[in-house]
Image (cartoon, rainbow, N blue to C red):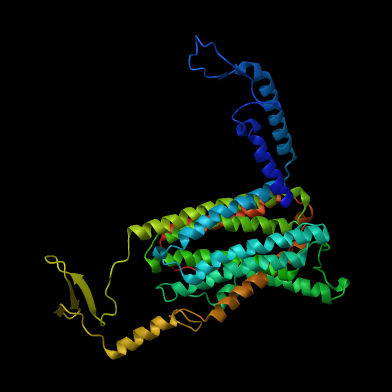
Length: 453
């Protein structure tokens, strides 16, 4: 990465002609010649530069040399150089995203905001890990499993904080429910993952002649370990979950533009698919461009999330929260008098009052229990499970997906004949399905969905 940064910096420096730093004059090792005009024609005795025409051939040669040097440097750039430069560039719009997301007017859940900030820890951990892989092993980070998995674990933690923060914020929202375990375990992903896991266990336990469905290909030496695949699949599933919870938060916060952040998060998911596809194809050189594509989608995701965060802040600033009356007794509602604009209260039985009616003690206890149960790890509102059960289901999905990828792909030939056609299919199909899912949810205007898939 350091070499790529230096090379990109050199190209940037060569784009600017050296004459720009010297008043626009060509450098010949001496000061420009000055000629004095006749006192009759120039009474003030002002000295003028000689005609620039004499220096034009030399300047044109210098410019041509600079252009050739730039072209040579550009031609020498590798996909790794481009990816490294894009990853560095992506940091700046992400900082802008954090700035606008953290505005107090947005009412961003604190733990969720911390999760987005924690991504910087992942970035900071990845740089020394990549350097260590190069210096100690002479390999890219993706081929040194323990360093790779350790660095990527910070990304999984990032997404975990985001999910936990926004789930606590939407707890108790009407229509929200946690999917039952039977629904998750009966999903196609869980079924295929369980089958792949069974095959993997049988391949290590049973003799080869007793196992009909043995692995068709041996696993390469640079294949990701099961824990490292767990980190990758959890990051993708957690990010999808976070997108659903951010969408729901639009209703809780009263700011509909939070749904725009879900759309802004889409390129990040596709970026993660690029990384996983690269690993599915065993980090093969013929598809090395996936790393540059991942970096490009990261830049796009930073920009779209920044724009979404700005729109959230803009709406919150233009529509400050209004003082509302809460905790009315059962059967009572509030309204504004058309003549005076004052607030009055009326009940279902026809009673009216200018003063806020008192709340019965039993109803007060119910309201208190409901609000306190929504932000804790225990079961809260109807349909809500404890955080342990919720993340237990998330873990089950990650286990199934990891087993499916790690051992299931050995049954096919395409991971061992990498091509961009296969890679783009593995990235494009899930991306299109993800987009169509959110298009459907936007049109349905219904928040009663399962954010796991």
